[in-house]
Structure formats: structure tokens, C-alpha cells
Length: 154
Image (tube, rainbow, N blue to C red; front, top):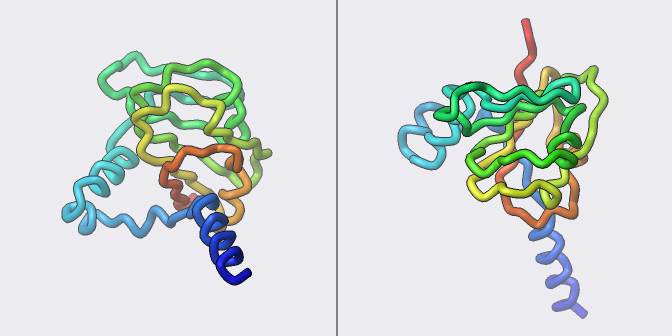
């Protein structure tokens, strides 16, 4: 009975996705770890090549910068429903405004995520990991780091 409980506990912990604070990635740390540096650079140095706001998708003309997708939290389901070519996308940036209605992201429905390195939820309020967790479908079996970043406008 004890081994069954331990196995169940380990299985549950493997199925749950840890939501990390993006602010823990600092430029100083980025210089030390190359994968962290790349993620930091992806977020701060790249303009999105695909913007999804108000259920409309706008592509940038530049193919050289096709590494970032930006989507409002209310339009996450657009990524699930439309057939976008996301094969070169390395970062999904989700803009999460407290006043927005939310929708859910189901990573299992999105094809061509072969290069995706992370998903970052940028909140305009003090969001909690549990709130972010509720926006991602538990059916997804893809292991992708998920971060949140609190960025309250002045």
C-alpha cells in the first residue's frame, strides 16, 4: 500500500506542469547559462512575427525574426483552432490583462511546435502560478517550460 501511494504521488508530480517566475532569469544568470540567455534574448530582443489580438492574426513581413508569437489571453483558443505554421516559433508570449476574458491553450491541438522553448505569460497584475495553470489544458503531454512575468503599467 505504501509503494502504491508513493507511485501515485510521483505520477501526479510528473503530470503537473511547474509554472516559473520569469523574473528569476536575470541578465547576469543569462551570461552563465546559454539556454537561459537564449530565452532571455527571445523575450526581450525579438519582435513577434505573429500577433493574435481580438481574434485577428497579423504576420510581420520579416521571415528572419519568425521566432516569437504574441497572443492575448482571451485569444489563446485561436492558436488551438487555426492551422498556423509554428514550426520556427521558439517562444509564445501571452499578454494577460486582468480585464480580459480568458480562454484555454491546449498544446496537444497545436501542431508544428518542434522548436518551442517556452511560453511566457506577461500579466498586468500580480498573477499567481495557479491562475496560469488554469489557462493550459491538462490534456497536453508536451513538456515545455511555462513562465509568468508581472509587468504592471505605471
